[in-house]
Length: 187
Image 1 (tube, rainbow, N blue to C red):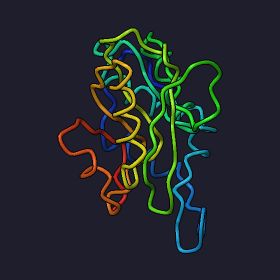
Image 2: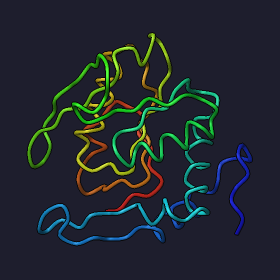
Image 3: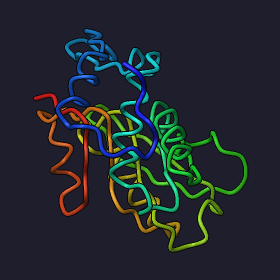
Image 4: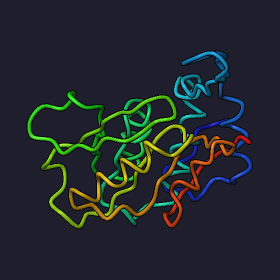
């Protein structure tokens, strides 16, 4: 099946979910015992599946945003490709200490510890409409922290989008009152 034509319209949600589901790999006991990690790297390696994902996400927000922000690390891959497909810029949201120059950071709690993420202090001039993207939505801690961080530096975050949502972990509830989209929900 050929890759979708950019701007050709929104792919059917069930078809997209099927492509995503068929492209995931379960990795047991990663990053710790008892966790089944949903690995999207096979999807990234499949040009058809990746094109379907990018077009599905782009069709939801084309013409509505000025920038795409992606969360390290797989959110960079999805976010940069999405920004390119939409004809907008990309802003990396990185782990602390990885960006050169002046940064703004936020610390947040994870299910098994804490973390800190940051963006360049001059990544936005203020008022840009930003789409926040990551590969997976789990508990929502990283997504909430990234959303709040982007707002702190002047963004108007319009939505959070992910490829896979782990519905049983409640991440959508953590983002209550905010627009959240996913291509596949795993319960």
